[in-house]
Length: 127
Image 1 (cartoon, rainbow, N blue to C red):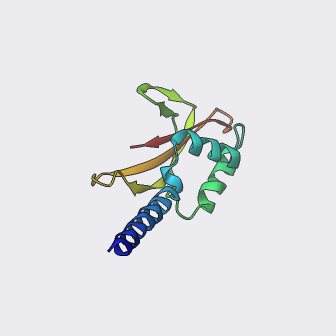
Image 2 (image 1 turned 180 degrees about the vertical axis):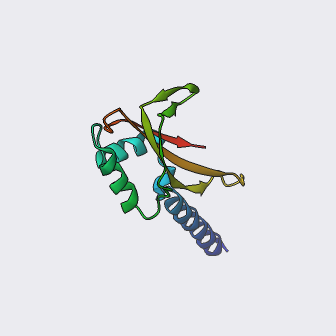
Image 3 (image 1 turned 90 degrees about the horizontal axis):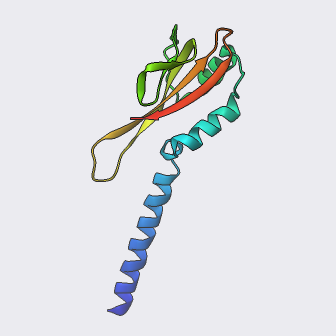
């Protein structure tokens, strides 16, 4: 009987570990700060708008509808202040929130550009 209990516990532990690894391996679950850092490694501050568009288009899982906003993107927590003269928005994807929640978390990235179409800032938003 003890062997059966031990085997069942081992199986349960392995299942929990496997599910944890699968969930944590999704890059969208990383913090917005870490995602921003990774994006800035791909396209650092000062990159051209054309370079940013090339990176976005090279990522098949990212969704960009080709729209370049003629205004900057809204500052986090203050929709009256914008970052940049122009901006691009791309949807990186979504993932299921907490296990007991049916809510999905959407990951969006905003790139802000100056009047010369040079990147000045990046924002990752999870909503």
